Image (cartoon, rainbow, N blue to C red; front, side):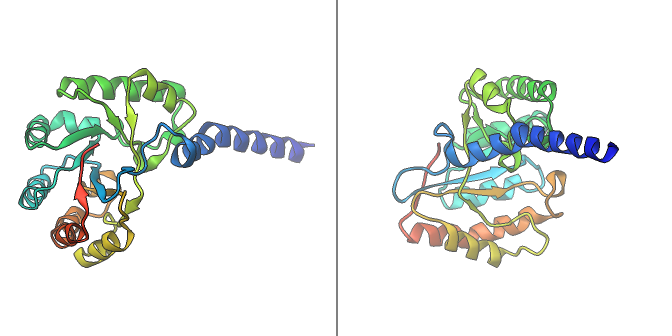
Length: 232
């Protein structure tokens, strides 16, 4: 009766979610050959930042990178980038790369086709307008849906994931915890993912301060291991 009907309905919803969201996300995270997950070059690692730019932290972060002669890649939320044109210019002018981290930092697993389409259209238009030649793309949380790869191809984007995180967005993170995780987890071909914005995208307030202090400690030690920082 009614209970069986509810059960069938529930199973259909679950099945749709698995096909729409779960399978595409894990396909990209694990199997998709076109997704970059490591540098693939021995002792060459990549430093990347998600969620910015945030005017409160970016200048100190760029200073630390300059002092250590490290070039990094910044995956920006398009709406943030649009509001911070001078920062985008400063980052590009400093020899760093800028990539795309979606239009509004929403979870693609929950996107409809029409929102996914709008996300990519708006993102592409904004980032092209900011002078990006090459379009590097990292989905928030690494989550995608069944339409994501179509739009990635359509706009000629290159999807870049990561293999190291340091939970630098958490309230209980400290410069020392970030340093330790970076040193313990980084391997000779790693792509490191850190965050240069805090509470605006789900991190703790002021979290990037810990990230910056943690990098001051970790970068010289990573270099001492023989690792060279490269761009995609």
